[in-house]
Structure formats: C-alpha cells, structure tokens
Image (cartoon, rainbow, N blue to C red; front, side):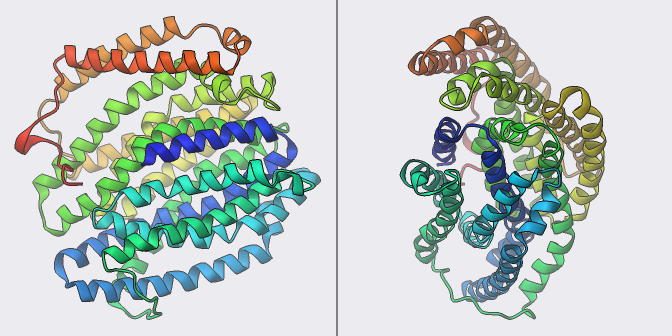
Length: 501
C-alpha cells in the first residue's frame, strides 16, 4: 500500500514539474506546503505517535477493551483541542510564520507563500487527526488502510493540477486548495476501519486521565526531539531561501526522490516495528525485543544499500525520466541531479535512524534520541554553513546526509552499550553477502546507465522504457547475487519476528 502511495507521489511530482516548473510561485507553494507538513511531523507523526503508541500498547496488554476505549476517547478530545488552537493561530499569523521559516524570500515569493499558507495550514489539524487514527489501527495490526491513506493526498493534488488551475491567477494556488481537500478526504477515509475494530468513539476532554497524562509527559521531551529532527530538514528551506530562485524547488524534488525508498520501506518498517517493540517491552520479552530490532536493521541494509547505489549511479536518468518535461528545463534537471547525488550518501542513514530510534521510543525513552539529535542538528548547521558556499543547494543536502550518519553511529553505540541492540549470530556472513551483491550491482549500474545527455535526447517513452528495463534487470541481478552468495529466507520459528504483522 505504501508503494502504491509513493508511485502516485511520483506521478504527482512529474505532473507538477511539467505544468508548474520551478518558478517563484512554485517555490512559494512548496514553502506553504512544507510548513504544515513540518508541524504534522512534529506533533502527529513525531512526538505524539512516539508517546501515544507505547502507552496504547500498554493498555492493550494490561487493560480491558472498555478502559482502552475510554483512554482513546479522552486522548482524542485533548488532541483535537490543541490542534484547533494551533490551527487558528497559524492561519491568523501566516505571514509571521513564513518570515520565520523562510526569511530570505523576496517580496513576491513572501506574499504568495503567506497567502497559500493560510489555505494549507488547516491541513495540519486534519492530517494530525488522521495520524492519530492511523496509530490506533497500526497498534491493532491494521496496516493497509493507514499505509494507503497518503495516496489520497497525491490523488487530490493530481486532480487539482489538471482540473482547476485555469480558474486561478496564480495556477499553483490550485495545489494549495488540493492540500486542504486532501486533509478532509484522508481523515474520513480511515474512520470506517476504526469502526470495524470498535474504537470509533466520541472525543471527550478530560486532562486528568492517567493515560492522557502519561502521553503528555512523554510528549514534552519528544516534541523537543521531533522538532530538532524536523529542523534539520527545514534548515534546507531556510538556507535555500537565500539562494537563487528555483533552489527550494530543486531541493524539494531531490528530497522526493530520496524519500521514495525511505517512505516505501524505511518509514513503513518503522511504522510496523514500533508497536511490535512496544508490546515486547510491555511483556518484558527482552529476547524477542532484541531479535525484532536486529531483524529491522538487516532489512534496512538489505534494501537501503542498493537503493543508495541506484540513487547515486542513476541520478541523471531518474531525474530526466521523471521530471524533464514541459517547464522543467535542462538547468532545473542538472541542478536537481546535484542534490540527488548528495542525498544518496545519506539515504541508508535516514532509514537506519527510523528503526534505531523506534527501539528507544518503544521503551518510553524519549530523552536519549533527543540528546543525540541535538548533536546531529548542531553538526548539520555547521556543515550547512560551510558547504553552502562551494556547493550551493547540493551542499545543504550533503550536510543533511553527513549529520544523519552521525545520528546513526551515536544511537547504535548507546543502544549497544545498554544491551538493547544485541548483535545476533550470522552478521559477518550477512555483511559479506551484501558486499558481494552490491558490488556486482554497482558495476552493472555504472556500465549500463549511460550518459545523462543521451537520456535527455530520448522522448518520454524511450526514457521510461529504458529506466524500467534497467530497474528490472538490476533487481533481478541483485536477488540472483544474494541467492548465489547463500542468503535464504529463514523458515519456521526463526523467521521474521514480525511474521504476524
């Protein structure tokens, strides 16, 4: 389901690049779109989910269904009130927020971004409530509906790009209204699934509930930690607002390409693994907890390494095939390729952070990831200030990649020393198998990818045809090399700890 959503996301970006290009108005829209997304990641999919899922898992393990429903009802009421207040303040102060998040905008982009932010900001409340419902469904093993829900945003944006742009003086403003429409569609889409598991309850405001208090207590440091993690991404927008027109859009499209494997596998795996780890922690199953974490790390490496190689060696063909149409000209293509290459060095780190931090959140330890993220963000700021001068927007992407590796290394050391991340047997053989398969894959991609200028000379069906053939061949070669090296799926009792999920 996540794969379907990400494919539609690529279609959305392909259409947007062709119709809108990389102009001042498009820069303004992506800033107006990124700010509520930043707040969503901060409150809903960030601090709230990290605090709410472990507490909900504890209720599921140690309380009755009626007690769990009361907790969910009171949590829904508290969350809705907070989100309503934040949304009203955001709409009324859209200009101030844009000035904070993108201080380097010229007057035209500033005015457009402020106007579109007043349209997109209510999306924060709607998508946060959607994330709340999705967290409940995930905790009860219902993963497909929450995973498919983001596809509805892509469908709404595709529909508005084709259907109503002609009615706006600034065509890309139609996308802002598409974002707001998507918020309503995504929220109501999940409610029937919540009803089927008997947890569609009426929100009630009761701050003194013990479960609500536990979530709020965990959220305080988690908000700080999530804000730091999101700031590391938002820093790129802040720095890019001082660069030439188009820089914000170039970074956006390269991030979208980097987040395809991250979203399809990295985020999806973290979404599945968090409630599983939380249940093992609640039942004090230390062995199963460690095995599940180990499984998650191996799966990340199995997918993350070839994905990183593909992004690096196929950066030109990917950007040309997906975006080099219409108003997305050659200059935009080459500039986007530079930041894609920079992000490819950090893709695996982005994925590993998701799993390693889930181990801390499952144990209701939010302070450790916060402290580590502070260090990583500090390094990110320093590297961004240094690398932006010689590398411009690509330097910002490279700074994010390098700081993410710092985050991974420190997280692993801390978890290993605490005995949480215990190395299971077979790692040396597994790494050798990965080295062999990815080495062969890298040689194949390097030889078969060809020159970027050749891809530009082809028409769209030649590009997509060659890219599809190259992708299928690469996947087949990688799987064949893994099989030849002796890697096999385990069976019986030793198969994936997440087999039920």
